View 1 (spheres, one colour):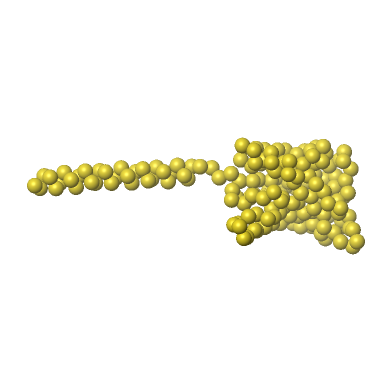
View 2 (cartoon, rainbow, N blue to C red; view 1 turned 135 degrees about the horizontal axis):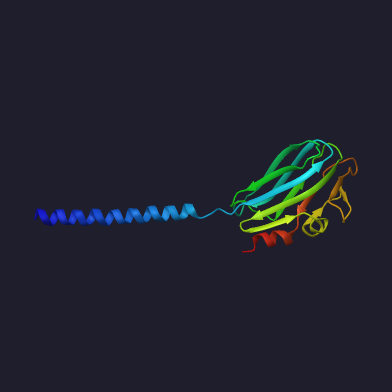
Length: 176
């Protein structure tokens, strides 16, 4: 009788231990799954100090809520290239991604390159043609379509220079 009880306890112990191992292995597999994040590297030179922003607006939280994420960086004029690196978590993705070039004073901004990466999809926008193809500029930015130089200007006394990523680039980023 004692042998039978010991045998049953031994089987239960071994059986339960294997289930625990499976749970631990499943948890480790879930941890190893890479989170897909959106990364934007904005490389530029500017002629005036200001606060630049990279913004992702209208991120759906649920059916009733949306949120915005704004990444601010104070920039100063320099002869070298400045970089703003913006990283957005995996659960934060929107089709409304905007670059704001500051609203203190009009300035000249030379875009060296903009690297946009989402998962394995990477796009390096480094020519005037790419800027035309992948970005839309508002009325506060003057630019020659053959140049990567953006000149911000006041319109009716206001200064709000922004440009946004077009849907064609968003769709290319989300392709698997």
